[in-house]
Image (spheres, rainbow, N blue to C red):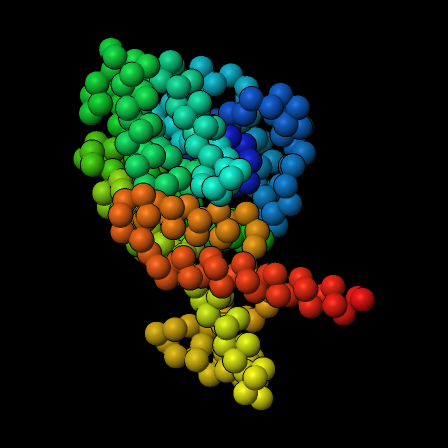
Length: 312
């Protein structure tokens, strides 16, 4: 089976290297010529433990290659994964899907033979359906279910442990309404199925929401323990002991119960905002997530003020 991954950023690079390790033929496509040349020379643009050796081994075996030639790569592929960036949009903080849709248009022009087009990027609910619509609009000669199918396959990679997260994940989530696509992706993840990894097949919309719901819940744990930290300070209690005391409850768990300045980074801020906006747009506001966003913003402002006051 041949896999083409559009986008050689963090998610695309890790995903491609790991699938190549599984034994699949993987082509990583990017429109940045300098990045592709660097990757061909074995230079990895990001630091992730074990990734450099994994990429080089994939190249040595001939199972992993890098190119700017999207057309040829898509023509030869059985599965095309979209792993481009979805940065927060200026103004409302919602996910910018322009890169996803541009990649979809380019993919549509080159589809040849039955191909499963997969959204690997973190995208709001409804995006995968829009991907299918764009393909049908660009290529009216192609029929969904005959010439192509779409699927959602969100990533759950953590920086610093991404390879382990891919090779030994808690679960794999696949959203599709096509039996043919389900069979293709089941074969793709068979190496993980053999080590008893749960493969969760859902509807497309459910799969898209699982990613945001997961990050929203983790962000909620961070906001919660930070509010408990404020309460502990007023009550004369120790938040670290409190976190240990509640974290040992198997229903709660110890992870993400470290009090601090609040969550940040490239995922939680934009994902909680995207989940909040999606919920409001659909008329089903998730007030817990709204409260988490407000609480986290207030926490960061308070911590920043404290730092400035200490300096002054």
